[in-house]
Image (tube, rainbow, N blue to C red; front, side, top):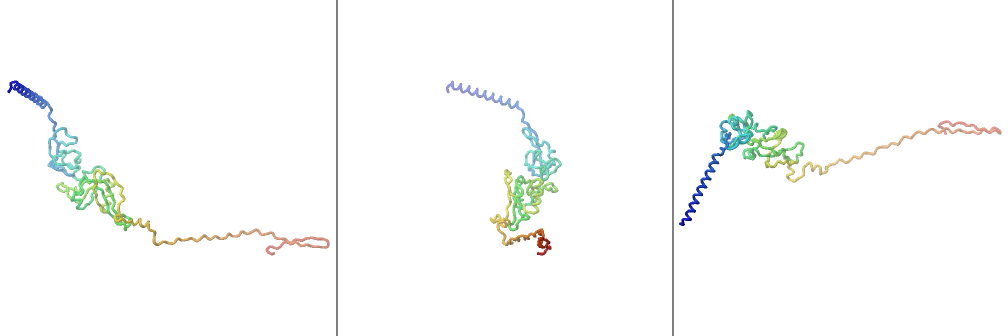
Length: 300
């Protein structure tokens, strides 16, 4: 090999080695001079915690959190114990105050109700309760089916949308706790409603048949719906409309009132004419006189 080429190669190797060493020293000094990452211990769920669960010691554990601690995080186990879960928490997830009920409020469904709202239980069939037709967090419309009071029986039953865009708080589970503090299963769906809606729904559940209809949670529009009767499904006119359209078969002839009797007015008695006097010419020789006598009244 040419001696000149060999010298150039050796110089290049020496320079690359020096550059690598300098880079290594620079990076090492920055790592040693940098601050250690911030860490903290936070309370996390040791298992999946369903809504309404009352937290005990075995339900939570401590875990290391890298970086700044988010606002609302629970840093001590005692703060989370004996508080109800108001939003489902998964294993390993960080616990926050907003996901738990206040202290001494207990667990169960009552702790999940927002202020000013009510929870009304609606009985459902096995398809709705067991097959997962509705689950907590979904939005539904409430339909009622029955015979409206004062309606025409010929129209058949009527279905009407009673409530719209109602949140499902729980489905298929009755949060009345047993002796172990666990929720008991029941075929009910708990709906989050206002006090006025709770009265309406309670009356409807006793007097009519209730059906729940799923809707898109993003669809919050309330549509005005008049309701549908059985006769509408077959395209026929409603009985009340037919009564207005068809004239009655038997009509009572119109009564003609007799014209009023006009009695002639009584004649007004005229004043009696003055009596006409009698004139008698008396000739006594050359003397001529006249004597007048009045005619008696009533005689001609």
